[in-house]
Image (cartoon, rainbow, N blue to C red; front, side):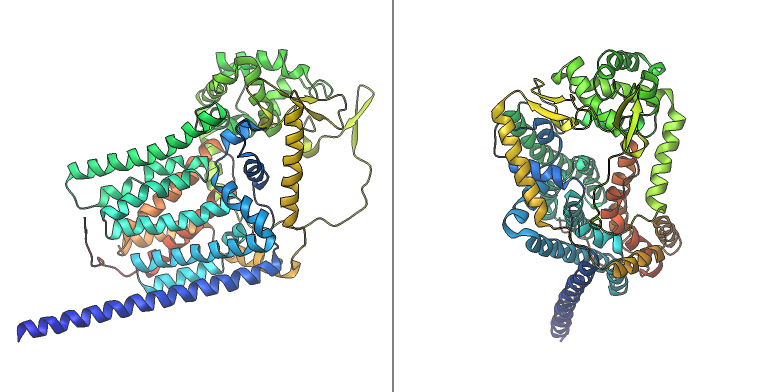
Length: 545
């Protein structure tokens, strides 16, 4: 009799588990359908427009088949996955197909975070999280702007679900999936390399002997490293430079401390004094610096991204292509050592802005068509020159950083300050560059420039401002988990660690950039909801390794 009752009990449990799985799939299907509907409504307010750096990714896509690319620095700096995804989408499906693909990525992403909430907590938290995310305009706006940011947000949601499953019920199969997942994330954005370290955290939560944990950690590190190194070797074989990111030393953290914090001065140390001599003897003798009489003091005091771009090419001319901008990195380190408190304060302000400033103002609208007026000018030594925009000392950099080549075969002809011209030493490359630019502009034109509904866009903007700042979600979540101790804390804190690592880590070398944070907003919002509504107690389940 006891055996019979046990069998009946097991059958009832199996039926209940099957019913729960069916209900969960139905719920996710409803969330996915609601996401598509919300995206369609938002598309009335916002048309699909080019996202951040889409121009770079399309240039990469159109030149990636050539062994000798027109812009090798660009190919060696940005990662290929956004180019591989959005290039063919725009080429073969146009704006309609690209918009549909973005809508599907958005729906999958919202569904993934809903599934995460259901796995870690319960249906109440999952339902509230789904509603909160569906009504959150900044995350939806990201998917109306095809770019590496939208693709990363999509990939992050799937990786988050994988991490949660690994923490909740670890298995060798899930551990094996970590390597390709992290590899794809790294191929989306260069800064995602820091995620390779965070990926190891779930292994610390698995109830296994330490020796086996170390073996699994080593295997995961090796797998991720092999994938990343394979791409570096591929780039080296094709483009002659074995590097994860060509301009990494020139960018992180120099871009921040030079162009925004203005902490780079010749008094910082020998590397900066050497840079100052190179700037005085080389860069300031070139146009447009010479025409606008930019002095050495003004160069460092009024530093901007335009000046930073010229430092990249100045480094190639002065210390050589193979120096890999180590001198510029030394300059950045000297600036931080000379001004540690100012640097720490600026990084703190960037992090604070990331979590307190409303960032959504709507997808860019097409400008109104007005007859072109006369260009603004300034008079320097009796000569009329174009007036620099944004209050800058010069109208443009001497040469964009993407034009850097190993043998300086691309130069800028500044015979006309108003209309500088790019010159190629190889006529064949000039012809191919013109072809790439024409094809890239044609792909961008497929997105169109039609405006959406201004009234609906303003409504969505007001909705965003009704949301509490992200620091409030973090504070409520932290208090809730500390006081109520709800279940699912291990998985939730793993996701939170991932988000904070990227957001804070990016602020170390970059100024306030909303696109670095928005892909993680669902995690912060879910953390706040779970802190209040998640049930207390441990969730049944255990390791299957």
